[in-house]
Image (cartoon, rainbow, N blue to C red; front, side, top):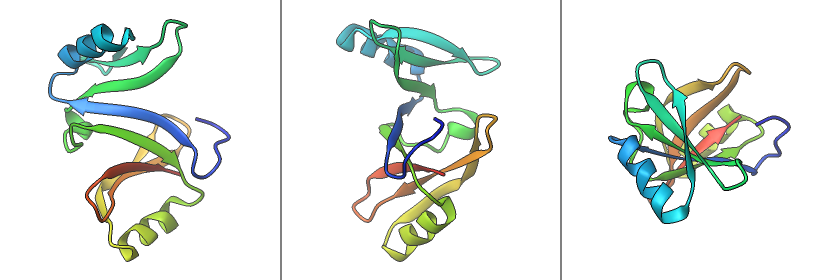
Length: 124
């Protein structure tokens, strides 16, 4: 997720209580290959197309992900996360949870809800 332009969609995740069963569903319905991603004492899953390219993630609603709603969430790059969070609030949206660190590169991300109730993850 390097060299991203503001507004670029970076990723899609689905977080559910039983990621194992749901990943099997998408394997059967879409043909995505299931690639386990170790989370320590359990696996989340990268869902890959026939060419081996990861298209999405399916995660267990555990630990830091326990608060995420069970729906597909897109991750979108923003130029300045703090400014975007301020704009979210002033435009009638809500910040859901805390800013969190993404991987080892120091980027932060945060879930927001728009005034209609839809969710999007802002990454900056």
